[in-house]
Length: 179
Image (tube, rainbow, N blue to C red; front, side, top):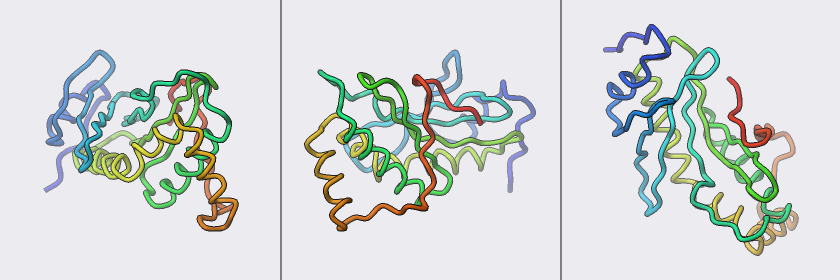
């Protein structure tokens, strides 16, 4: 049986509670611990956005950079995010930040009214996406040698990039993207 849709954006916490995922409530929304079968820990942020609910996972919060990563790092991360978007239709990748402090995240946008099932599906999709590529995105953004190998492999035909793939959403200055 389907849960009723939420009536107002302010009910994000009750929607998170009803979804069954472990969460903590914050000033701007909820922080939901995602289940992954890796040692990495990922948290989704569920918050109100223009006309809906935005659930997103920061993939670069744990990346410590001593110097700005070269362009190859951004290109490799962008290619992996495109590939992930192609396989996970509900999840989109977003790159932004500055050259010295890159920002990468996965996000799902939900329109209002939003049901408990829709939020649970969004969190499940983010969980799977983090399991598939979360640590790899972190590695590509922090390790130029790996990123360059990835670009070489793509150029060499072993892992071709599709030219018709949708572009990754670019976040200007690390700001959240709009719905």
